[in-house]
Image (cartoon, rainbow, N blue to C red; front, top):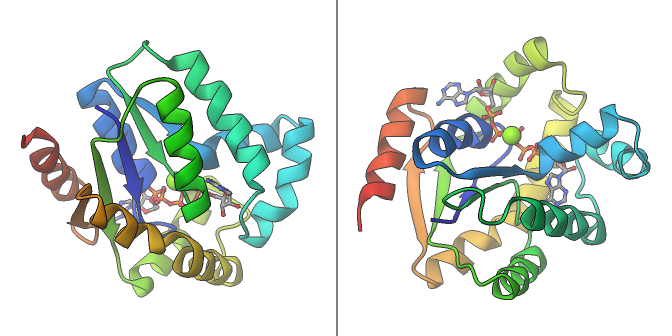
Length: 189
Ligand code: AP5
Ligand code: MG
Protein backbone atom coordinates (compact mmCIF):
# COMPACT_ATOMS: atom_id res chain seq x y z
CA UNK A 1 0.00 0.00 0.00
CA UNK A 2 1.39 3.42 -1.00
CA UNK A 3 -0.08 6.54 0.57
CA UNK A 4 0.19 10.31 0.43
CA UNK A 5 -0.53 12.47 3.50
CA UNK A 6 -1.71 15.94 2.51
CA UNK A 7 -2.35 18.88 4.81
CA UNK A 8 -1.19 22.35 5.80
CA UNK A 9 1.85 22.98 8.02
CA UNK A 10 1.17 21.64 11.51
CA UNK A 11 -1.81 19.52 10.43
CA UNK A 12 -0.26 16.42 12.01
CA UNK A 13 1.25 14.73 8.93
CA UNK A 14 4.46 13.71 10.72
CA UNK A 15 2.61 12.61 13.86
CA UNK A 16 0.16 10.43 11.95
CA UNK A 17 2.79 9.18 9.48
CA UNK A 18 4.78 7.55 12.27
CA UNK A 19 1.71 5.76 13.63
CA UNK A 20 0.50 4.61 10.20
CA UNK A 21 3.94 3.39 9.13
CA UNK A 22 4.35 1.33 12.27
CA UNK A 23 0.92 -0.29 11.96
CA UNK A 24 1.08 -1.02 8.22
CA UNK A 25 4.85 -1.55 7.85
CA UNK A 26 5.25 1.41 5.49
CA UNK A 27 8.39 3.38 4.75
CA UNK A 28 8.02 7.01 5.93
CA UNK A 29 9.30 9.44 3.32
CA UNK A 30 9.22 12.98 4.76
CA UNK A 31 10.95 15.46 2.45
CA UNK A 32 10.94 18.00 5.32
CA UNK A 33 12.76 15.59 7.68
CA UNK A 34 15.28 14.65 4.99
CA UNK A 35 15.98 18.31 4.20
CA UNK A 36 16.36 19.25 7.89
CA UNK A 37 18.79 16.38 8.27
CA UNK A 38 20.84 17.68 5.32
CA UNK A 39 20.84 21.16 6.86
CA UNK A 40 22.02 19.93 10.25
CA UNK A 41 24.74 17.83 8.60
CA UNK A 42 25.87 20.88 6.63
CA UNK A 43 25.86 19.04 3.28
CA UNK A 44 25.93 20.96 -0.02
CA UNK A 45 22.26 20.21 -0.45
CA UNK A 46 21.53 21.42 3.09
CA UNK A 47 23.38 24.66 2.46
CA UNK A 48 21.32 25.24 -0.70
CA UNK A 49 18.03 24.43 1.05
CA UNK A 50 18.48 26.22 4.38
CA UNK A 51 17.49 29.78 3.43
CA UNK A 52 14.53 28.58 1.40
CA UNK A 53 13.19 26.51 4.31
CA UNK A 54 13.75 29.34 6.78
CA UNK A 55 11.67 31.61 4.56
CA UNK A 56 8.87 29.04 4.25
CA UNK A 57 9.25 28.73 0.48
CA UNK A 58 9.54 25.56 -1.60
CA UNK A 59 12.93 24.03 -2.27
CA UNK A 60 13.55 23.52 -6.01
CA UNK A 61 12.02 20.51 -7.72
CA UNK A 62 15.48 19.42 -8.92
CA UNK A 63 16.64 18.94 -5.34
CA UNK A 64 13.41 17.31 -4.22
CA UNK A 65 13.26 14.84 -7.10
CA UNK A 66 16.88 13.84 -6.51
CA UNK A 67 16.04 13.13 -2.85
CA UNK A 68 12.92 11.14 -3.75
CA UNK A 69 14.69 9.09 -6.42
CA UNK A 70 17.51 8.00 -4.18
CA UNK A 71 15.14 7.33 -1.26
CA UNK A 72 12.86 5.16 -3.43
CA UNK A 73 15.80 3.23 -4.83
CA UNK A 74 17.29 2.61 -1.39
CA UNK A 75 14.04 1.46 0.20
CA UNK A 76 12.01 -0.18 -2.56
CA UNK A 77 10.92 -3.71 -1.60
CA UNK A 78 12.07 -3.35 2.02
CA UNK A 79 8.59 -2.42 3.31
CA UNK A 80 4.95 -3.04 2.43
CA UNK A 81 4.87 0.35 0.71
CA UNK A 82 5.70 4.05 1.01
CA UNK A 83 4.03 6.86 2.90
CA UNK A 84 4.77 10.25 1.34
CA UNK A 85 4.65 13.11 3.90
CA UNK A 86 5.20 16.61 2.53
CA UNK A 87 5.57 15.43 -1.06
CA UNK A 88 4.13 16.07 -3.59
CA UNK A 89 3.57 19.73 -2.81
CA UNK A 90 2.55 21.03 -6.24
CA UNK A 91 0.95 19.73 -9.42
CA UNK A 92 4.40 19.59 -11.04
CA UNK A 93 5.68 17.40 -8.21
CA UNK A 94 2.60 15.17 -8.49
CA UNK A 95 3.33 14.63 -12.19
CA UNK A 96 6.95 13.87 -11.44
CA UNK A 97 5.90 11.39 -8.75
CA UNK A 98 3.66 9.65 -11.30
CA UNK A 99 6.63 9.23 -13.66
CA UNK A 100 8.89 7.94 -10.89
CA UNK A 101 6.30 5.46 -9.71
CA UNK A 102 5.73 4.16 -13.21
CA UNK A 103 9.45 3.53 -13.49
CA UNK A 104 9.42 1.27 -10.41
CA UNK A 105 5.94 -0.17 -11.03
CA UNK A 106 4.09 1.15 -8.02
CA UNK A 107 0.84 3.12 -7.67
CA UNK A 108 -0.70 5.41 -5.04
CA UNK A 109 -3.64 3.68 -3.34
CA UNK A 110 -5.00 6.48 -1.17
CA UNK A 111 -4.40 10.15 -0.39
CA UNK A 112 -5.35 11.26 3.13
CA UNK A 113 -6.12 14.96 3.64
CA UNK A 114 -5.82 16.24 7.21
CA UNK A 115 -8.15 19.23 7.56
CA UNK A 116 -7.22 21.71 10.31
CA UNK A 117 -8.24 25.38 10.74
CA UNK A 118 -5.56 28.06 10.53
CA UNK A 119 -5.99 29.25 14.14
CA UNK A 120 -5.32 25.71 15.43
CA UNK A 121 -2.27 25.39 13.15
CA UNK A 122 -0.72 28.53 14.62
CA UNK A 123 -1.24 27.25 18.20
CA UNK A 124 0.39 23.93 17.33
CA UNK A 125 3.35 25.50 15.54
CA UNK A 126 4.04 27.89 18.41
CA UNK A 127 3.91 24.97 20.87
CA UNK A 128 6.17 22.80 18.73
CA UNK A 129 8.77 25.57 18.49
CA UNK A 130 9.32 25.18 22.25
CA UNK A 131 9.89 21.42 21.84
CA UNK A 132 11.76 21.04 18.55
CA UNK A 133 13.16 24.53 17.95
CA UNK A 134 12.45 24.47 14.22
CA UNK A 135 13.55 27.80 12.77
CA UNK A 136 10.54 27.95 10.42
CA UNK A 137 8.11 27.59 13.36
CA UNK A 138 7.15 31.19 13.99
CA UNK A 139 4.16 33.35 13.09
CA UNK A 140 5.75 35.17 10.13
CA UNK A 141 7.24 32.11 8.45
CA UNK A 142 4.06 30.15 9.12
CA UNK A 143 2.19 32.79 7.11
CA UNK A 144 4.46 32.14 4.11
CA UNK A 145 4.17 28.37 4.57
CA UNK A 146 0.38 28.65 4.65
CA UNK A 147 0.38 30.90 1.63
CA UNK A 148 2.55 28.41 -0.29
CA UNK A 149 0.23 25.61 0.84
CA UNK A 150 -2.89 27.43 -0.37
CA UNK A 151 -1.48 28.47 -3.74
CA UNK A 152 0.74 25.52 -4.67
CA UNK A 153 -0.31 22.47 -2.66
CA UNK A 154 -4.07 22.84 -2.26
CA UNK A 155 -4.72 22.24 -6.00
CA UNK A 156 -3.66 18.65 -5.27
CA UNK A 157 -6.89 18.18 -3.30
CA UNK A 158 -8.99 18.47 -6.47
CA UNK A 159 -6.37 16.60 -8.48
CA UNK A 160 -6.49 13.50 -6.25
CA UNK A 161 -10.24 13.84 -5.69
CA UNK A 162 -10.74 13.63 -9.47
CA UNK A 163 -8.66 10.44 -9.45
CA UNK A 164 -10.99 9.06 -6.71
CA UNK A 165 -8.05 8.68 -4.32
CA UNK A 166 -8.81 11.45 -1.80
CA UNK A 167 -10.05 10.69 1.73
CA UNK A 168 -10.68 13.59 4.14
CA UNK A 169 -10.05 13.38 7.87
CA UNK A 170 -10.82 15.94 10.57
CA UNK A 171 -7.32 16.67 11.84
CA UNK A 172 -8.54 18.89 14.71
CA UNK A 173 -9.55 15.88 16.78
CA UNK A 174 -7.29 14.37 19.41
CA UNK A 175 -4.26 12.48 17.99
CA UNK A 176 -5.58 8.96 18.69
CA UNK A 177 -9.00 9.79 17.28
CA UNK A 178 -7.43 11.10 14.05
CA UNK A 179 -5.39 7.91 13.90
CA UNK A 180 -8.47 5.72 14.34
CA UNK A 181 -10.27 7.61 11.58
CA UNK A 182 -7.30 7.05 9.27
CA UNK A 183 -7.07 3.36 10.17
CA UNK A 184 -10.75 2.92 9.35
CA UNK A 185 -10.13 4.41 5.90
CA UNK A 186 -7.04 2.29 5.29
CA UNK A 187 -8.67 -0.93 6.43
CA UNK A 188 -11.68 -0.39 4.16
CA UNK A 189 -11.42 -2.07 0.76
P1 AP5 B 1 7.70 19.98 6.20
O1 AP5 B 1 8.66 19.45 7.17
O2 AP5 B 1 6.98 19.05 5.32
O3 AP5 B 1 6.70 20.91 6.99
P2 AP5 B 1 5.14 21.22 6.86
O4 AP5 B 1 4.42 20.69 5.71
O5 AP5 B 1 5.07 22.69 7.05
O6 AP5 B 1 4.53 20.43 8.02
P3 AP5 B 1 5.02 20.28 9.47
O7 AP5 B 1 6.10 19.27 9.55
O8 AP5 B 1 5.27 21.63 10.06
O9 AP5 B 1 3.69 19.77 10.17
P4 AP5 B 1 3.04 18.32 10.19
O10 AP5 B 1 1.82 18.33 9.35
O11 AP5 B 1 4.05 17.27 9.95
O12 AP5 B 1 2.56 18.31 11.71
P5 AP5 B 1 3.18 17.55 12.97
O13 AP5 B 1 2.76 16.15 12.98
O14 AP5 B 1 4.60 17.90 13.15
O15 AP5 B 1 8.44 21.03 5.26
C1 AP5 B 1 9.29 22.02 5.80
C2 AP5 B 1 9.92 22.84 4.68
O16 AP5 B 1 10.76 21.98 3.89
C3 AP5 B 1 8.95 23.45 3.67
O17 AP5 B 1 8.44 24.70 4.12
C4 AP5 B 1 9.84 23.57 2.43
O18 AP5 B 1 10.70 24.67 2.54
C5 AP5 B 1 10.67 22.30 2.50
N1 AP5 B 1 10.04 21.17 1.78
C6 AP5 B 1 9.56 20.03 2.34
N2 AP5 B 1 9.05 19.21 1.39
C7 AP5 B 1 9.19 19.87 0.21
C8 AP5 B 1 8.80 19.56 -1.12
N3 AP5 B 1 8.17 18.42 -1.44
N4 AP5 B 1 9.07 20.46 -2.08
C9 AP5 B 1 9.71 21.63 -1.79
N5 AP5 B 1 10.09 21.98 -0.55
C10 AP5 B 1 9.82 21.12 0.45
O19 AP5 B 1 2.31 18.30 14.12
C11 AP5 B 1 2.55 19.65 14.45
C12 AP5 B 1 2.44 19.82 15.99
O20 AP5 B 1 1.10 19.56 16.40
C13 AP5 B 1 3.31 18.82 16.77
O21 AP5 B 1 3.80 19.47 17.90
C14 AP5 B 1 2.33 17.71 17.15
O22 AP5 B 1 2.68 17.09 18.36
C15 AP5 B 1 1.02 18.46 17.30
N6 AP5 B 1 -0.15 17.66 16.88
C16 AP5 B 1 -0.22 16.81 15.82
N7 AP5 B 1 -1.46 16.30 15.71
C17 AP5 B 1 -2.20 16.84 16.72
C18 AP5 B 1 -3.56 16.71 17.12
N8 AP5 B 1 -4.40 15.92 16.48
N9 AP5 B 1 -3.97 17.43 18.20
C19 AP5 B 1 -3.10 18.24 18.87
N10 AP5 B 1 -1.80 18.41 18.54
C20 AP5 B 1 -1.36 17.73 17.48
MG1 MG C 1 6.08 17.25 9.40
